[in-house]
Image (cartoon, rainbow, N blue to C red; front, side):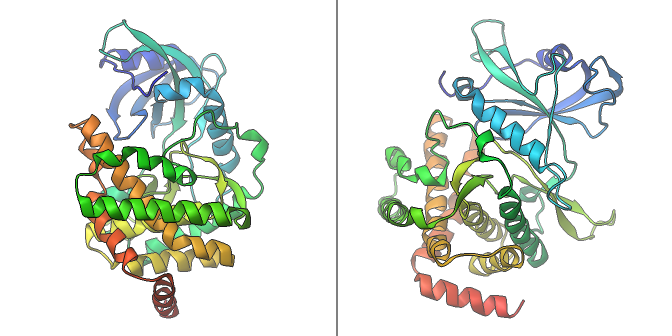
Length: 376
């Protein structure tokens, strides 16, 4: 099945939840996203016909209807569920979503849903799950964050996550059916989308980055420790909460969400992605110099984990490759979906940070990071 999202009416959503999970929906809202249809639902905590959910949470749930492309790869969904269940309670102080069983006892179900218009025909099969919800705000929606302390927390989280994942049974991860273009290890696929780039200067830089990253990864991949990674540690997947109810109370990292990009790859790539996204976020919000932000995240990571010379050597070109992925895929998706401005989220800040990194040698970058970290 091609990449598709279901199209549901306001009436169909409560009906679907009732039919699958035996819960009564009181309200729902739609989350932004590239691929899946994600709905935040509030249910009546006093009503449940589901013995697997005898006491519905007053915090609500996330009804996740996976993109149609996952229909041919249900093993990927099972892998995500296994990972979330494994992580639950293992990341000290950090919450993760966990799947809930449906009335049929499954952690996910195939459901026939409309996808061209909110009617009963035509329909396709989609994979539907119900996940616990972590109350809070996405980092992307907190104008004053990330601060220095939060950047350090994110670095520590990435380091702790990598350590914890060393004990995860990789046998629970199904081999991928398709090569996902968003996975950093598949970055060369972005070359096929470069016709979406109109600016000749950007086009040259993007081509150079993609070629350099592919050469580096091909040559040094055997030196990079492998394991299961989150695959998308960005500002939209980090949940924040304030330490008190006062308006100016400090924020802290409460949880991480969205494991739909989890896969077997180079362990260091989660750090690469977190570095890139936090540099972009600080640039976009005008909070900190992007290079300084990267140093602070890296400092936090080193408090929880170690890094090998080979892993150090891929950080800079890895960050450049991730930013290039985000920029090119965003431009391509916007041309396909002109009304979806969410996909242009990183365009302005992304190009600025990418230029900053390209103008700086790896040695200079690490020297600057070391100087910043010495002051922390």
